[in-house]
Image (cartoon, rainbow, N blue to C red; front, top):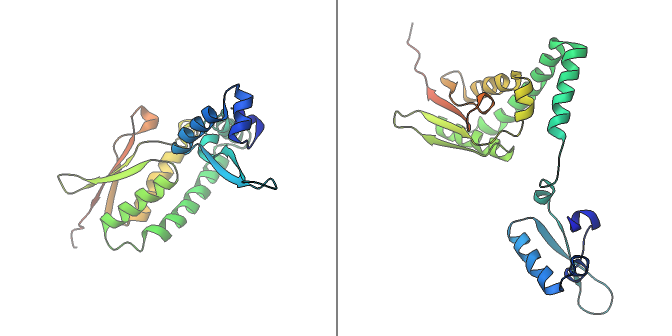
Length: 203
């Protein structure tokens, strides 16, 4: 909280503000650095050894109150009430198209279904879904998402979930069946998707 309010500080300055020694402050900073919450940079102050100034990392910023979820829900409600469901559907469609385009570029070069699902899981993890995948005993694949960073929006408008499922189906190809099994918005601990290749019977 002190670094958030005061900005970058040395261990000595931080100790002074907290009413402790610089060494005690340095030990706390070292622990926070191991957790990826603070980082140090050297600042020259003229003669003598440069001073280490400590500041918060982007990861630490997420520990502070953030009302973006409430704002998102409010904006969705305004769009729906003032502009109608068609306008909300249009917004979701644009997001779906942009997501599909980005995913295709990343997933399409993969040589087989397992590689495509692995690439999709990596993309989703980068976006905050804490995704992974595994092969099931029956040979199908399971895409697992342990977190939903758009949960508030998806709860307010399940069109986002529908659009994501359609993106998965589109990106993985016409010969692949994708079915959602668990669903965070419906009370599940995580979202899971069963993925398997489909063999079409010849005419």
